Image (cartoon, rainbow, N blue to C red; front, side, top):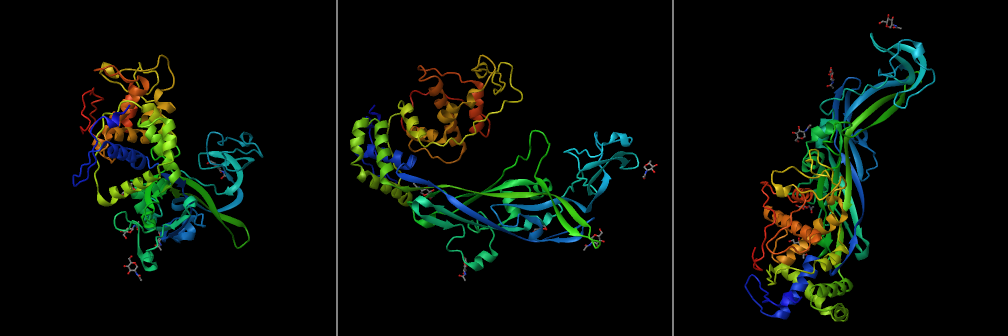
Length: 530
Ligand SMILES: *[C@@H]1O[C@H](CO)[C@@H](O)[C@H](O)[C@H]1NC(C)=O
Ligand SMILES: *[C@@H]1O[C@H](CO)[C@@H](O)[C@H](O)[C@H]1NC(C)=O
Ligand SMILES: *[C@@H]1O[C@H](CO)[C@@H](O)[C@H](O)[C@H]1NC(C)=O
Ligand SMILES: *[C@@H]1O[C@H](CO)[C@@H](O)[C@H](O)[C@H]1NC(C)=O
Ligand SMILES: *[C@@H]1O[C@H](CO)[C@@H](O)[C@H](O)[C@H]1NC(C)=O
């Protein structure tokens, strides 16, 4: 139980100052866990926000039926109020001069007729365009259909222009004004930052590298950031998310807290089948002819809907969670009993200052701290318990069966393999896959749990992106899975994991080159090996 005290404890900086002291070492290890890994010394609050938008730009079209036409913001931006979700029209099917009259229905199985007796006066089909008059009339030279009372001529929406009519929309810009509040901390801020002046705002344009704080975005750039092609997306329409992340650590000065923008396509660009792709809706413009007949131009509009989504949590130092979490962490690390830690908690005011001090040291002086500790072996259930309290499961738990799963696979989620040890299914009859269980998400895939376990084993582990990190995460997930399903395996042995779980894990933490060594037996690891 006293794992952390039983080895040499060291605390070092880049200047290689080494303090060999059990007490200091274990206190810093504790601070590291509570402060750096969990940030448990903070109270948290979620962001509240409002968004308004304003699109700018003009486009020109010259199409039959409409003639030469200049499109300004009032034409293509729907709705015009400038809400957090706005639509920019890029492609359309126009049906001009529609009037209330009668005309032949568009031909399909139920509307083609030979004589008037095939049509029923007064009947209407929800999928049709109007109310039948009971007559069977010429639709074309060869086809006759039932006549309907409707807005005539009817819209024929089968030939959508292959290139977006309003191609110029790629150069339109949008100004996004976003105000956020963290009510618990009485914190208010806009995405137009205090150092931005009006002359800058008039000509700036968002660029991740040169102008990351400019709130004016070119539509094409946003779509490109989401790794999509504007003209392709504009043809059939789509939905693009503009994500603004306001996550902040309010222990640092206010100007460190700013918006971080990212973009992603929200609708599925390649659905399993190609039915009903993109995004479109219809609207009409009404007017009266000189002889006072109500007439309209019907527009089936295709375009991109931009949804601005604001999210974030802020944390700020608070003594109460610090005491609670330090107490809990002490218990987990096996340093004190629960009863003692409750008593001890009250005397921990000093600890919170150490907490902040360590954070400041890490960020401002680039200190590297070294802890020596034995390999992590036990306490896992305790730790999971603690972490679960505010653990957010961010992995999608929904797992769809694979198209070509082998016969021996009863959950439908395995992949074929030649290796006998990779052909294991954990089910005896057809049914749900173990990877869809919530325990799989919580114990095996939860990011906070994994990070904590990794840092517990390897305090110097860098939680950055990279092939090596992904491999470490993958192996950590295997270990988590094994301790969840099998407990501690006997020496020099390794349980075989079901194929569905192995591949699910590999998908989430993939190896770029595609070589998977799996988990190797390592009983003789030295504590500081990397
Ligand atoms: C629009 O197109 C028509 C023929 O397609 C052409 O005669 C006319 O000049 C065009 N108008 C403009 C303003 O380009
Ligand atoms: C309908 O089409 C038929 C055959 O094409 C033609 O003989 C007839 O005159 C047409 N009726 C009307 C009202 O145009
Ligand atoms: C958008 O602007 C760029 C540069 O200003 C120009 O090269 C491009 O042709 C414009 N796109 C359209 C569709 O007009
Ligand atoms: C506005 O800000 C820009 C850059 O932030 C700066 O170069 C410029 O001098 C400022 N203009 C005024 C009038 O303050
Ligand atoms: C230290 O600074 C980095 C940016 O340089 C920041 O991402 C990180 O959150 C800071 N660390 C702490 C503990 O606040």
